[in-house]
Length: 315
Image 1: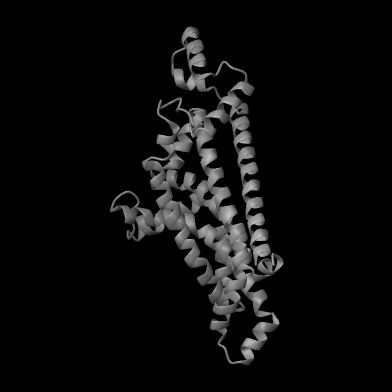
Image 2: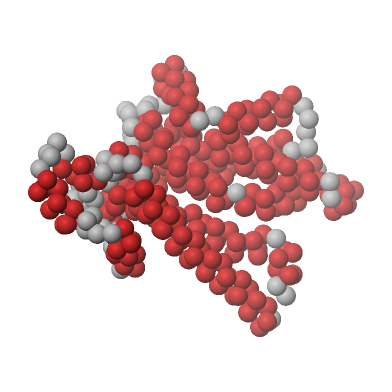
């Protein structure tokens, strides 16, 4: 048992160290991408002013007159101390912008969307796995359309149907929960569509295994077989997509918040990119990478519970 624990601990430590290396790579690549991209943050700070003396003073105050290697070193040093710098445009600490009310708004949207996707995907997979009727084929077609369609297009269609035509869900009126439903559903549908397809395939593969035939011979119903045995086998490929799902939520939030006029991290990101607000852009990139890698690490650890073969391999 002691050797088994050491092997599991070694696997977890290896995953964490890999995440730290990927985090450093994400910080470095985002720093280089922002500084190589066209746009001048000094011009954004100065506005309509063109005074050379003011430009030189701003560059000196913000350290923009230093070589890029020096700026990168200072950026890493600040990150190690938990300092994301100050916004060029707002003049506020980046931590206040990212971790204030806007983060709560975006987290609320992403969390509700994730809940919808996690509930909807296995439900659709269980209902349609192993069936070849018209309902299953139609549902698969809808899933492909939703997975392929741009999020803003899905959002506009839902607004037209439920807000303008049926008038059952508001976009800007109503209480907070009512305003949250449409953007959350818009964000959840493409993710649920992909997860449902992957889980359905996993369930169908499980139903072809010998243990499924044994279970049928004992008189277990088809629905119970899919839920009790097939669903667990589908969790392994579905869990592999957890990182993709989280990144889809993060990137989709930027678009959805603009479509539905919600004030969150997405709107702050668009504003930072528009005005070349480098510290905020880097802060958003760092936050996104941290969330993505955290989920990836948790999923890798969860594999030890989901897949018994991995537990046996560590024994």
